[in-house]
Length: 286
Image (tube, rainbow, N blue to C red; front, top):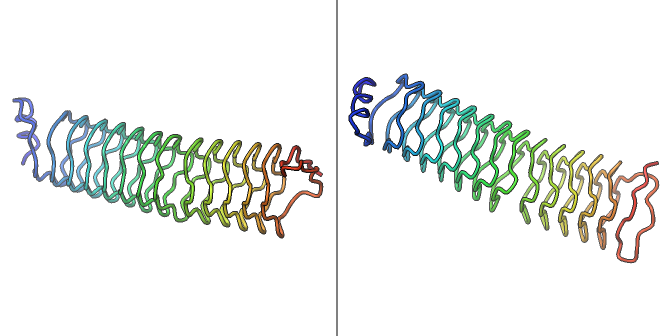
């Protein structure tokens, strides 16, 4: 279908364009609000700065499409293919991307607050400085994803895959990653206050200079973890395994370390006395 014909039909009130073939089409800055584009072929199409608010693109093909800075709030993308698509700066608040294929896509600076990405494949995607606050990321594949400086407070991480993901500088306050496999994950300089890491595997994770105030690390595996300069004020580390972890310059004020394993743990030379409950009242830097 020619673009001019599609826009003419839209102006006449038609909203159903399911299955339309617009491969490589230039639709930049187009306004198509509340349209049905299910199953459409938009591979390589240019939709930058387009308005597709409340539209349905479920099962659509958008490989290599350019959706940068598009207005896409409350859109539906269930089972859509956005592999290698450019969504930099896109506004996608409350969008539904359940089971979408998003591997290698660029979501840098995009706003996906309260979006639903359950079951989506984000493997290798660029999510630098993304807004995913209160988003649903359950069962999402985030392996090798760059989430540096992202905002994810209040997001759901149930059964998420985070193999070697970059979460440095992210805002993750109050999240629940209890029991998660977080080996080798980069959390450096992240904000993790009040988060739940109970029984999580953080072995050899990078937690340097992170804020873990009031965090729950009860029973967590932190074997070989790098915690240099981290703030663990009032954190619960009871029964945590800190074997060979680096706790140099860590703030452990009022942290609970009851039954924690500290074998071969790297500590500063002077650690103040513990109370009978194994709570550290002050961490003294040499």
